[in-house]
Length: 92
Figure 1 (cartoon, helix red, strand yellow):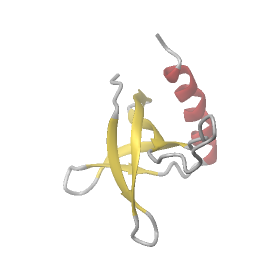
Figure 2 (cartoon, rainbow, N blue to C red; figure 1 turned 90 degrees about the vertical axis):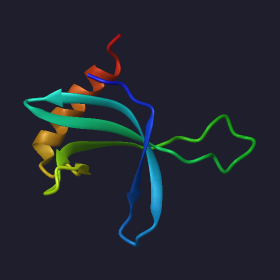
Figure 3 (cartoon, rainbow, N blue to C red; figure 1 turned 180 degrees about the horizontal axis):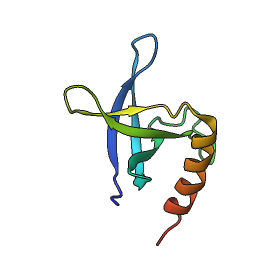
Figure 4 (cartoon, rainbow, N blue to C red; figure 1 turned 135 degrees about the vertical axis):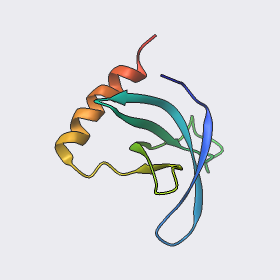
């Protein structure tokens, strides 16, 4: 398993670009997953740090063989992967 501090660019449904940082990649049952965090600065200069959202996505390949991130649509699988991700994030 690899730990990254790599930025990945995404586009929202309106075509706006935004970056996320890969915090952790891991495998589970022959599939790859990633925990990502929003890469945006805090807009409040006097706070102790704004909360950033974490996202859990499956890593798969598109028809051209390029790695892409996709939403985990099955809720039961998502819950299982959340538990695995929590273990992976806190490993030494």
